[in-house]
Length: 105
Image (cartoon, rainbow, N blue to C red; front, top):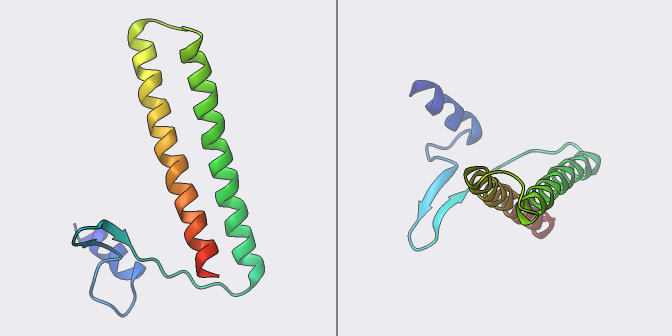
């Protein structure tokens, strides 16, 4: 528990509140401060997030195709469905993060 408190405090230096807070009616909101020394660092972060998003999309398509072609047993297809759902969720979160970065510029 103490390690997570230290991580939280490091993520929000000088503030006692958590970077992941509950805002009434909006669910949880992540507040993140990330200093950049140059525009090249911002570009590098965007590139890394785009690469991660492309990787997730590839997983969605690959697993979705395998599922659509009827590969595996019923339980394997159920597992693939879950994996596609998880990859879709990660893809959507990366997309939202990229949009937030663009809006902050």
